Length: 117
Image 1 (cartoon, helix red, strand yellow):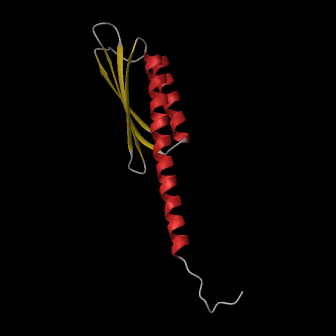
Image 2 (cartoon, helix red, strand yellow; image 1 turned 135 degrees about the vertical axis):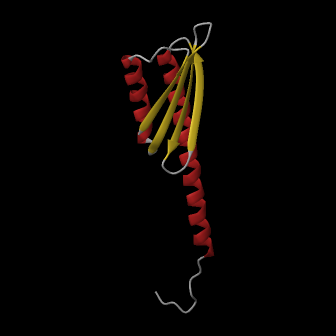
């Protein structure tokens, strides 16, 4: 997993915050194979942090979530939940479509009348 950080109006992201972000994003690898992660962090004039995370998986899907909150840790917690929901929804859709395909093949199969069991 390749993680790229972009900062705006922030000197740098502390090592503790960076480790927390990486820990939370690694939990997404249980759900899908993650190829790239882009993390954009900016601090607004009112002191709130704005975080935007884009996750690209090996199967070509892209998941994106953003959050505005008082702390970076709160942002990443909410974003992790949103990304998990998106990934689960997507994998469930593919499972349902595969099952439908299997059902349609079963319906189309016919048994030869001359077959002996």
